[in-house]
View 1 (cartoon, helix red, strand yellow):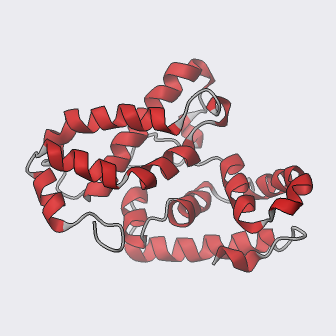
View 2: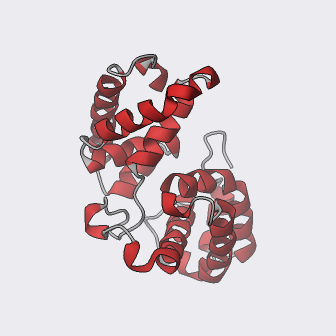
Length: 214
């Protein structure tokens, strides 16, 4: 891995050549990033019933099995391929546990031109308050989270999604652009706009410093 968290060229090259051991090594190195993605997108009705580690365990087997397919995905960076495989496994586990109770995929942002799980406003509000409030404020956290979630619901889904990608999954602008099917410039502009809107929302909540999002 490079300092930026991007897979090294040699490791990506081995993966593109169908090297299963390279896929296993890369998955292990990226495990923390993938776990953040799963935790962010795991349906809250399954929290406590399904652990992100369970999803990663199944995704690891999928990666081993699908490694030969990566050679045909010429335009997809190695990490985003791992992320896609993991997200697809998360969708399958959602369907298994929730069935007809799954969210309407048509209401979610479409990632990689498919219906992968979107980050819910509940998850975003919870993570934001975890970063922006202190433990001594726990007594009023629930009320703040509800107000923040309601405010996040007013944002466009794509704005919420790019905040999730850049702010919590910590994807680069180029990676976020690839995920959303946007140009690099469009993704950057969208993130700046979404971050500005987020700061406006946070400024309405007492005891929260909107500049902490930087």
